Image (cartoon, rainbow, N blue to C red; front, top):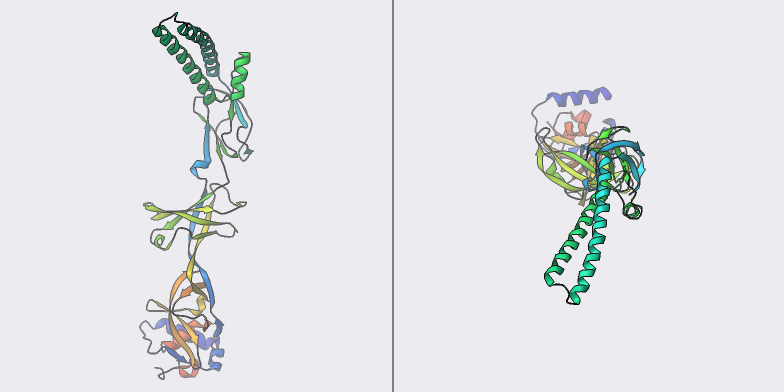
Length: 375
């Protein structure tokens, strides 16, 4: 019987032009058994697999920082390495910086000038109230004092930018003790992604030292073929292959990459992310939830003819041929839609033999006949 079926199949492949003259295939139970046709129920599903696409794991720009040197100097110590978890405010590196000494001297001088200016300000304010000095002299004293205040604020901000904390500034104001050591602190809690210097290296102002990222939110940047991007919607589910990790599409790009003719789709990864790493390339499957149910059917039960797809529904005479629409495809099954109730029993194996019979490529003896008697 296997030889007979193979001959039937080969004959079907050799015939290039054939037309179906009936949508009913008359076939007995014995012939169904002999041809290896298996019948099963339709399985309703509402999640449609749309396509597979490569993706890259990335960090949202707002969650990634490049830590640079605020002053030129010599890297004296590095406290953390790539992959280390760090907390906001943690000291990551130490820099010996002569420029830091100049900023501290500027701050101390401005603080001293402000104190002297404040004494003159308070004195002239009292003299003005007593009518001893003119209003013009008071305005000059007040303007001079406000200038000293501005200079202190500027010097303080420069030191804060350089990396001194509020407690460091307070200590400097009390002790007047200068230091050339600049502490580089973490701006956020996160993971060190890259180290860009070595201890003992002399660096310029704004030279990059570390790259750090907050990993609480990760994205998938998916490269979707431009001819398929129209099938996608915001909110579609993304499944990483061989992983329980899922994501949800949050953006569909508006431009096409000229190098590979793909459109960028961005998805936000859900929940915990134990098995993905920033920069990792993964294969993803995009799955769409449909308001109307489709049906999961083995590919062996689907026949294609003249660009259309069909399934074979069991009835009292044998099978009837039903037009369907392919909503999504997997390696061994497809998701179909059409005028179906879900109660139908269909051929889930042996579609090739039924198609050959339907197109009149088999004999009545071996394959059953059409409702009109066959060719």
